[in-house]
Length: 362
Image (cartoon, rainbow, N blue to C red; front, top):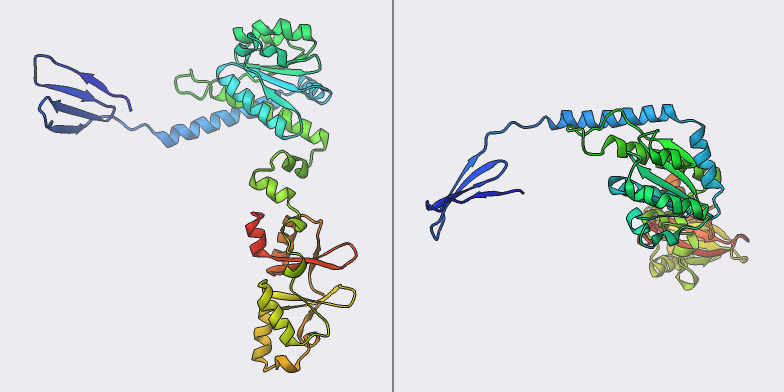
């Protein structure tokens, strides 16, 4: 909030101005505040917001129509790079550059951001002749960028520039130039970089995703660089990471009595028990719901074998499958738990939806 104080030494009060209020403060020990709303017209914010979004969307659409063989050359340079992609830019272009570097790094292309001003004071040592340097400057005349260009060239690194001026010094001195020029900024004053930075960011995204596609980068590859997030957990967690093993697996033999199954369900707390044969292969399942239905049908637990009331052909999943596959299976068949088997078909684990929730897979 911006405040302006006007002091009048010859009087006992002063005025305080804000954008929407006029406040008069007296110089007494307990000041009286007289607040009057200032007279101002509200800006048509929604109309302006829509204009900004449509203008920037239109600039990106025009940018897409201007893509040519230079873009393919840029993609080829990045794909053939044996070092790293170094992204650099000043001011708002620098902020966009940081995002482009982060996107490249997270999609299979080793990349980092280098501040051009710091580069002139030692950080150029980060660059090798095996690298590709992406430089961003709307004008193409950023002094900090132009200062380091000769050194980058002497090192042998390839330079890709993204500018809004095709005839700029940076565009001419680059091995590949990508135009991100816009017809106008979205800023009502025509001053703040808005449409131009959006265009540069979109162009950087296009580069990164084309390289991703040509590298045949997979969702699992993506997850490896995001192990700490929800996406990483979902894509990297396997069934063996969440299942219960050993004595925690609810299981009875196929010749057991229903009372044995009841005790096993109660003891293990998963809401079901597996029924296995002599080879430890699951041949059936019996759940809490099955037990309630058995009681409704006046089934005597002490006189009934589990084989008489179990569901045969139970749903199972391999221990090396992804946990998200288990979620999909459970949703498709509307079940809350699964038995886990190895490739020999032997029961090696069990889990329910609570285990998946605890592992933050869902």
